[in-house]
Image 1 (tube, rainbow, N blue to C red):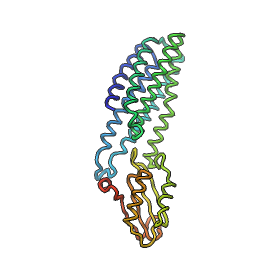
Image 2: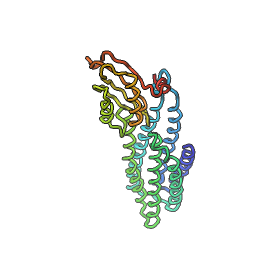
Image 3: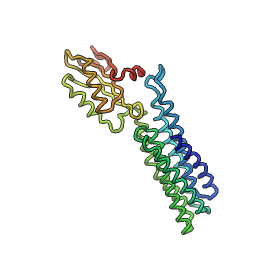
Image 4: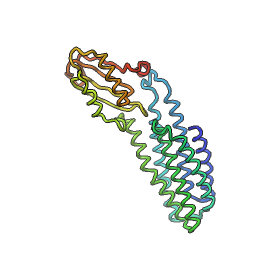
Length: 298
C-alpha cells in the first residue's frame, strides 16, 4: 500500500500539470480521480494503524470501525469529484478548448501503467478489508479512466473533435458513480449496525434452534464491527437441567466455524421471558472461545 501510495501520489501531480498544459479535461478528470486514490490509500493506511489499537475503557470494541468511516469518506469524495467533472464538461461542451492530443496520449499511457501496478499491489487485500476495497475500487476505476483518455486522445488526433475530451470525462464520472454507491451503501450498513453482507440471519437462527437442548431463540442481533468482524447477541431458552457451559462452547464453536461470528454473547434462560426487557433466571455469558480477545471488549 505504501508503494501504491507513492506511485499514485507522484503521478497524480504529473497528470494534473499535464492536463493543465494540454488543455485536456479528461486528463484533469483522471488526475482528480488519482487525487481521491491518493487520499484513499493514505486514509486506508491510517485506518489500518488506528484499527490495530487495543480496546480501552472508552472504546470497548476497539478502533476497527475507523476504517469503515474512512471508506464512507472516500465514497463521498468520489461523488464530489463526479459533480465537478459534470459541471466542467458542460462548460467545455459550450466552448470546446484546444486540446494537445499527443502529450495527452503519452501522459494517459503512463497513468495506465501506474494504475495497473497499484491494482496488482492492492488486489490481495481488497477481499478482506472494506477500506482497502475502497482504495482498490478507486484505482480500478482510474485505470478505466486512463484507458478512456487514451481512446479520447486517439480520436482527437485523428479527427480533431475536441468535444470528445469532455465526453470522455463525463463517461469516466458516470462509470465511477455506481461503484461509489456500492461502497457507500456497504459502509452505511456497517455504521447502522445492519446484518453484514452475505450473512443470512434466518440460517443462523435455525442453526442455533437445531440444538436438541434449545427450546427457543429471541432478541437475536447480528452486526459488523468492521471488515470481517461479525458480532452476535441473543437470548436462548434452554431445556431444564442443561449444562450451560457445554452448550455455550459447542454453539460458539459452531457459529465461529460455520458463519465466521467472531464475538458472541448468549443470554441463557430456563424460563420464558416475562417481559421484553427483563428476563428471569438468565446468565450473561460472553464468548469463551477466545478469552483474551473478549476481555479486551469487556
